[in-house]
Image (cartoon, rainbow over all chains, first blue to last red):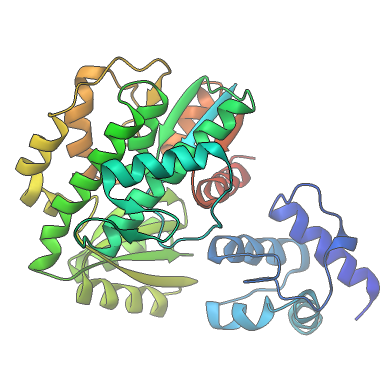
Length: 85
Length: 279
């Protein structure tokens, strides 16, 4: 996975969740996005599902898949590489 | 134009308690009038349910947050409440005092808790499905749509077993998440009529002043007058919360900056979703 893809995913997270005062450099590639990481919840998850499909053409069909995909930026990148258009 | 939005009952205690004089003052009022020790989250009198505890906690945190914004010189031009967020909204707008609204919250919550002594109730948060299929699932399982938060975020309310069945069916039909939470009463459904009479006695026992700031209600997006408040407090427990319509109406009324005044940030996230669809 390219550094550019990681950067684009981090920017997508910031834009779609409208996180103020944060840049891609502030998000660690392997840090958890939910819980003690960025502290995201199910409302955020659905927002990320829509953004991932729009920006990368990668469909997350259900919460079980989402739990794996949204573990970290790296896992999102892996999923996009395998399922994106 | 600033809008203060007051969230409803939190589903859990989610934030550390602030260390400032306003929180100390709200804690003292909460202890005196609602019998809850906020810092320990324990009752000083009786043992009401966990739902009542969350209701009192939620109102107390909203009152503290409103004071904090006031100290920062942030003032609203319009106010709205989601569900029981109407209670601290009434206090901010000068309709009732902070201590009275804490007492009202405790008394109303304790009254509603009696429903839970006869049956087990629950709430179901469903994300991902649109209204039409979820409505069909609700009807087939005998539960009610209690919150219309966005085009894909809804809350179901009803008996515990039925809510569990509806949540499972929602997941089978493509919901992204469907989480259930226990509660004392089937909030925002016609089933609440069962306790309407004692609730009416509680709500009509307070004197309500005219709001100093317009309060938009979350059912039909009208601005509340003082004389309408007691009836609205009953009505809002028996009817769904229409948050998406309320946000759109606030936006149409000129609100440009939205402050979530209370525990959590669900309303901001619902607004973000609605804004995304409005763009």
